[in-house]
Amino acid sequence: MSPREYRSDKRQAAAEETRRRILDAARALLADAAPPRLSVDAVAKAADVSRQSVYNAFGSKSGLLEALFDTLADRAGMGLADAFTAPDADQALTAFTQMFCRFWANDRTVLRRLRGMAVLDQDLERLLRRRDEMRRTALTELLLRFTDTPDAATIDVIWQLTSFETYDAIAARDQTRTPEDVAHVIAAAATAVHHSMPPT
Amino acid sequence: MSPREYRSDKRQAAAEETRRRILDAARALLADAAPPRLSVDAVAKAADVSRQSVYNAFGSKSGLLEALFDTLADRAGMGLADAFTAPDADQALTAFTQMFCRFWANDRTVLRRLRGMAVLDQDLERLLRRRDEMRRTALTELLLRFTDTPDAATIDVIWQLTSFETYDAIAARDQTRTPEDVAHVIAAAATAVHHSMPPT
DNA sequence: GAATTCTTTGGACAGACTGTAAATCCAATA
DNA sequence: TATTGGATTTACAGTCTGTCCAAAGAATTC
Image 1 (cartoon, chains in turn red, blue, orange, purple):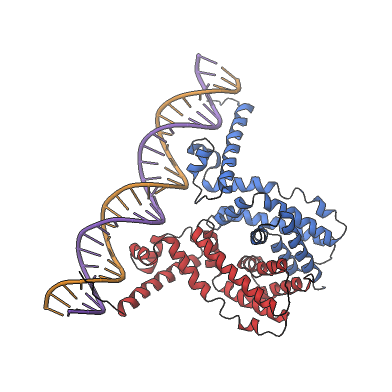
Image 2 (cartoon, chains in turn cyan, orange, brown, yellow):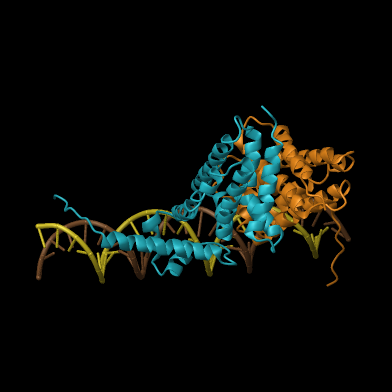
């Protein structure tokens, strides 16, 4: 009748381990060259785990994709210190851009596919939107350090310039460009737009 | 043995008609608020046509999506005359931007979903890439009228600024903006980037 | 050691979807 | 009237998601 008190570290650690294995397998599959579609079955096989365990750990395919995106996205936003300690707006914008381009470059294929899948998956879509929104608030804060009332339209444009879509498109245009090159191109555009900002 | 010479206008017209009906139904479904997924069955039902007819007319679901995108995209590129007769680069870029924004605004939801599906559909992906490439060559030609050797990186950025992704993101940020407002915001950014173009 | 709890596994199943095939119907045409 | 292209109907194979359940394995508590 009265339930026993259970507090296990080994079991919890093991569960975390399989979670991690599944996420790793999913990431590897999505990063692979030709994945026509990502099935839960394929992920389970790649992680050497039963299909049921995937549902056990993440509830659904959407849950798995959301968790995967979160693990990738959590790494972003970490290195924004450079941008926020820059002495002027140009250097701040450049640091901001570089930071995100590094992040986009890291898991480019995976991110592109996740974003594609989000179009058909409302939960995932909401998650991505929330993350993009975080980038925008960070950008707004950044510009507030150098401008009293930054123009909303300008922020929107720079926000879009620092998006994954822009990085992916520019990087795809010229395969010889390194992520740093792409960041440089985007940062130049961002500062140009910023300089043309109308006075309020 | 010898096949009759059949040249029917009525039959061909009827076939065209069902094709059109199917495309219309698919577009309507994709434009609808909450389409969790677009199945061939749903399209057939909405077009009041058998599922087999869809395969008859388009071969596969990919074929249907490609045809749908083509009918939408063919309307673009029509109204570029304004841009190519503009007296200076700024007006040309503005006309160019407005033209595409009008197009993006027309079938915004459908385009967004088609682009999402393209991530999981190689044929569709190739088609979209080809269309985007056409926009880039048009843009290059346009800038060649006012600049001897336009900077490749600058073109890439303006190309991205006039993309559907940029339009969609900027329009989504502020629902009160009309398509013309969005075009204005983007055109301002494009001209700013163009002005900052490094001399060659 | 024995009971208890959590996790994983395997199999089976319903339901939705894509794509193919064969038989049939219908209207336009020769 | 016989023929033909297109549309319909029905059936089927195969894949995928998501759920249920019974059983096994392992760690933890008593």
